[in-house]
Length: 554
Image (tube, rainbow, N blue to C red; front, side, top):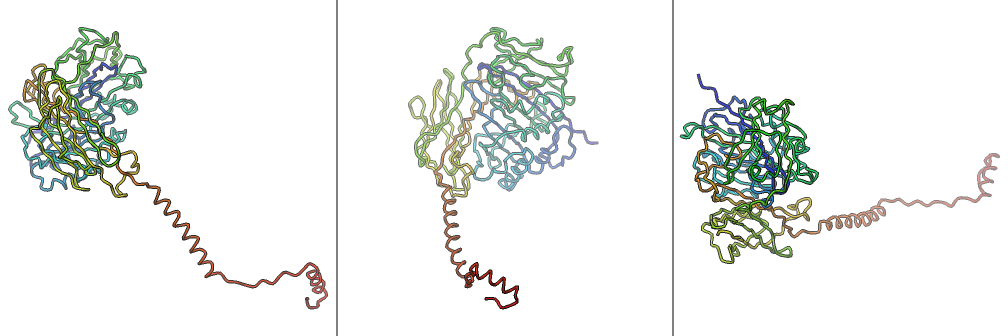
């Protein structure tokens, strides 16, 4: 008989105190199923893997799927680098299998189906905001795919994330929101935060170092940053109940691993905060090129809950933190110029490494109504021209596709690289404006992908048992690690007509028609009759008397 498919489910929560006084919480839920979605065999039996996603992957021949919904912007200079970056709004990029013949048609159908699954506006993704990157988004799973015609990438920077997006996301979990770490996902607290991001990643992974067998991995992530003043009432004292209004009482019964990590890297030397209840379990992990120390609470062990059968970790600051180390790579972007005809897009890329230069790959997707003058493209570092070693540019077509610009740049050590390009604003048709055109039009975030030099040796074996938050991006070299950085989305004003003029014209026209046509119609249809003047009072009295007497009236 055929071997039954194997399942595995893990859940993790990482809590990282930030130097700004805020606190960063990252949830990771990983479901692995050794079913072959990419083969000819039909998959029909689901247990831990959500059936809704499994059917979508099978029907549309999806190799990899990555989708995120983010509210707020990640402040790199205040919070450092996130475990899993994401741009504001909605982001979707998909690798299709090479058996797909009509990629654009399949992409359109897939976005409509995902829009219904996640209760989002993904149905607004069309050819005008979809690009086909040539180098930026490599597969994160197994397989060396080089044909980028099966890749599609799109963003909706104006997408609003709310409870209606969180509810279907939680339903994909094996335990839902009934047990385990998911009981902390209370919408009232999550959306009362400075930053909130939820994502779903589906990809094929290896089961052994030789990669003789493969599995399908579903990773659901949720990142949230609670502000010191709005959520913490100005006190540098955090607990699970203060952050989520709930505590942990049990692990998910279907999870093989359920752990809570608290970053205490700086605590043994400086001891800026006190962690209670204390745990003897400590572990080290290489995260973002640095070796970090974590206190571990294993929820599968009953001793972690204590006598109260409830886990409510408390972090109380005793002293101010030291200065945060600047991230090695971060970026900014803004629009310059005046008027509503022309402007410039400036992208600043910072390399804070004191002596190492490294290359970065910049991707910019600009809507068609901002007509780029690509001959004005300039790249400078330290006051000198920085010639890109690779440029891929696809011009836009009005109302059909956006601009796509990809460049491979070398960032000198301890430098700021500025990328500038001029554009001209197009005049839209009056039916193409949004309901609030004076608010402006959004331009999606630029994407920067780089192999950043690592402080410690990275682990290149992806099959070892490591924390989930340190094993998402594949690592091929020990001396560097992969990082993806998103810039701010842009808000650009376009020439906007006076939409009150049609209303004024309609009112004036209706008034003229009513007065002119009404008068003419009245003259043509009215009938005239001669009314005799009414008799006087004496005559009326005489006629009354004559009527009583029976004689003719006057």
